[in-house]
Length: 419
Image 1 (tube, rainbow, N blue to C red):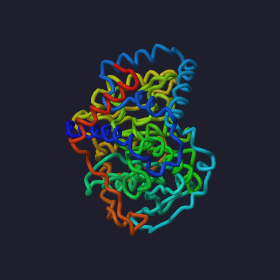
Image 2: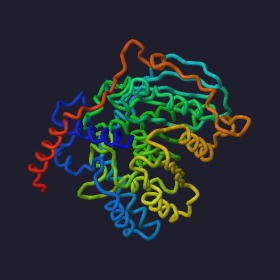
Image 3: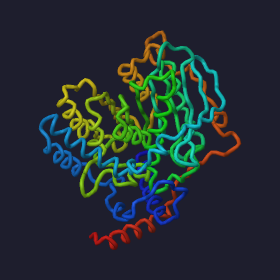
Image 4: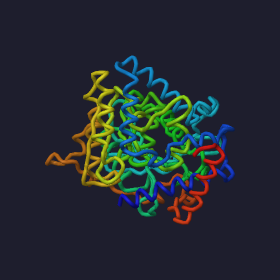
């Protein structure tokens, strides 16, 4: 399993490098002229070893001894992240544009509804997904965004996955308004290819835009906002927590690592980790969320295997500066793998219930155990907003790209005098 996951991210990087030389796909936001220089500052995939990451975290920790010094660093890193992701280049005319929602079919389920919705994102582009809402609720409901990760199986794909449906449905039963949505170039999100060079920017903007929309609804509480996803969805969760101060609870699942930076353009295809003015990694970025509640779920068979010993202590020390150790947790499952399986969902439900004021008992059976049997899965076709259009199916990458990848790396090094 680990070998298969590692190969996937390796070839994600390969495909990103190849895409840099392809024509841009309907890009509506300017890409800086120094794109090649940005490329050599990227921290992609296994950018460093765990030992190097340990030294790097120690170097970061040496720059602060108190809350004031930490917040000075945090402000600089956050600013550099936003600049590196080019979120500051999105004009207000786009950020504040009308949502023009397309409301599709609503499915009446057992205690909740699922509505197929698309809202306007970048010009000519719609953000597609499904809104899960409790059928009965008092007052305003907390919001939970549910981004998905990468995957290439037609039977277990994107926001249509059984795990995605179960998680969103359970959250709705607990009293939240949950929204599952497509990654760039996945599902019904076909305006951009997933390998477009600014996928990281587009996906982060999509999450911010969806939060804008959800906060505009009269039945949501924008003071209680959670986001959780696994793998690439965990990266999206982390990045939104850095970019948008409205997020109050974050749960990145099987993703946060101090030495693995994500191997896809949507995770590490822009210089958010390193520039002439800053250096960071995903654990350090996660620390920017302090002192707000954060849960990190890790497993024993991917790059989060050593998170309890390497990444989590760094984060706890930041939370100690705020006397907020109770707000940060790590659930480590050493015998499990890279997914958002039942045991991981159980941990997320409990944490979200605690910090968003949800009704955890609503998903417990008579024995006090979490039970998702009430969820009736909806067929992919029935969850689509645009029923007459095929979904975009992102297939896996080929081993044939390896030689091209090596050649591209050498070209970048030669052009930038890197040895």
